[in-house]
Picture 1 (spheres, rainbow, N blue to C red):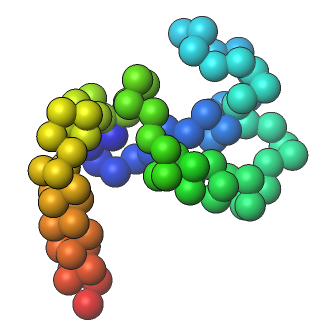
Picture 2: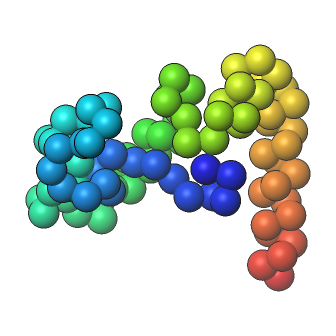
Picture 3: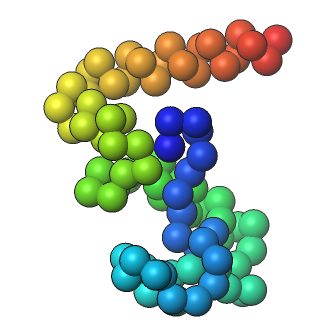
Length: 85
């Protein structure tokens, strides 16, 4: 999302998805560990699903103007690093 929140199915509350996008087995289960959650985050970063984006504007830019998108992300990362120190 625009505020930096991520949308990962295994972090969604257990049970059926009221919108029908996810199977119950794709949502939170007590068997998930920090490792499975981190693998999901890495997978999302390595292969983002632009067909179901949390941030529609970013997905559109990623598809249509990838080099501009990469530059914007690099600026955002640099700013975050500067703000930390």
